Length: 97
Image (cartoon, rainbow, N blue to C red; front, side):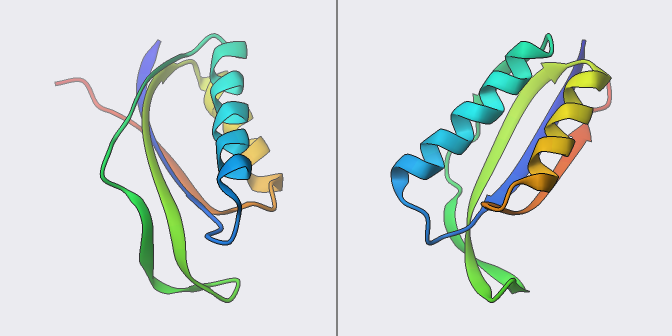
């Protein structure tokens, strides 16, 4: 398995329960596709964005580290793209040191 870092931005007007639901859904995808969730990097949360996206000037930033296979990343990418609650995302494979 490879190490990955994923950052995604959730719409800021969602309730805390909806945010928790999104995170739980993404956790489940990582586990279902043979991955391991490592941690959520603290200190992010609601922040002002550099430019407006879909008329939002703020977003809830979430940064995760996880281990997974290429299939894990493909499924995460697919699900995030069709989700209405997420504004942007990026998944990066960490290089070996």
